[in-house]
Image (tube, rainbow, N blue to C red; front, top):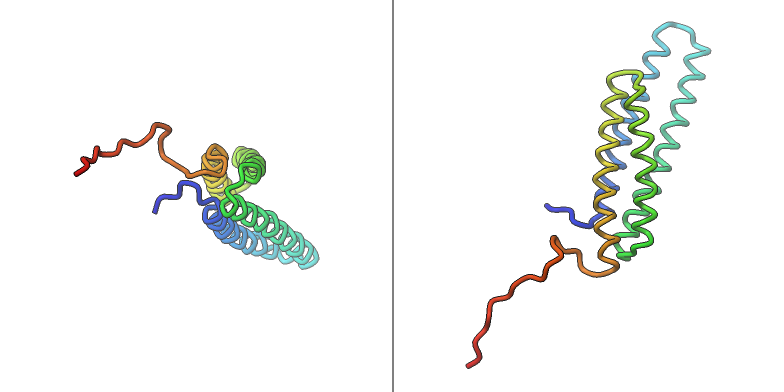
Length: 149
């Protein structure tokens, strides 16, 4: 399956993968904090981790809706908004990859950056089409000459 302009599908896949990594990171964070036996810090850290995951779900859910709207309406303005939002995700993911706290954090950041770059390319192609058909090249296709009888 080639995704040429399907920003809705791509952003939904991004949402699912980010949430999967978010919940794995949440569980790892809770286990790491609660392993030491200080239950006051364990409860506080768990609440903060849950709030962080819910904020991630809200942001990437918004990106998924924006990606679907850009694809459905073939709107170059929505595609530009999606590109801007994904550039922010890319910048934050690359910053987090540079300052990773654990191997899981590094892998999560690199996967986030890869998805953001992929969606930026899809949104750019969608914005370049300006509501028209998405094609792979800019030159017109050659049609075979037909003979009239």
